[in-house]
Image 1 (tube, protein in one colour):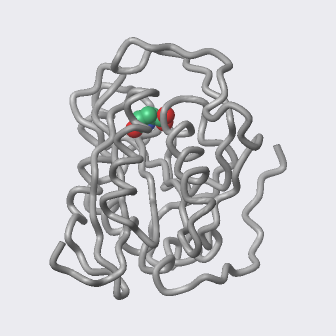
Image 2: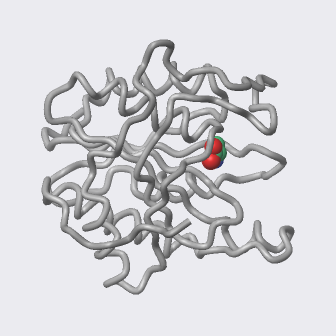
Length: 218
Ligand code: PCA
């Protein structure tokens, strides 16, 4: 790679669950090669498959050697850019993945810790998104499908690497997907892409989070 800037590994997924596109891949590929706060963005697509997603992730981590890792995934039905606080050590698939696998109550990493908190400045990211007029939220569950699996693995694989930080953002359907999902909220690709760039700029320019309430009562 020509650039000597520290790198951001930004991942999106291929389509799954009957969709023909995955907005996460559309958004992250739009940022591939971009320079953000002194970092170079490298976008990679992960398969929506429990087993192979981690193989591709591991290879990307080895190749890119990122300082920052941000996973992005589609969360149809969510209305906001959804910054994940935590990833848990369980796979419980409601639908088969793209390879036909449907793990039920299987740990992501045998003998791994129950969960990892994101070590990105999630409240500062949230504040920057809101300041830019983009709907965003802190989410306390990334689900139990391939996204949580990848978010957990990102944290686990990078936990031993000094200075490497990782996190995950779920995004809504795009408008043309929502045409086929009555009542499902959607967000324009330009807004998602801009939101990811804003969030990454915050991550790349600060270690410290801010103190601001963004929890839920239930
Ligand atoms: N969303 C799924 C997996 C791939 C994606 O984009 C999830 O939320 O688990």
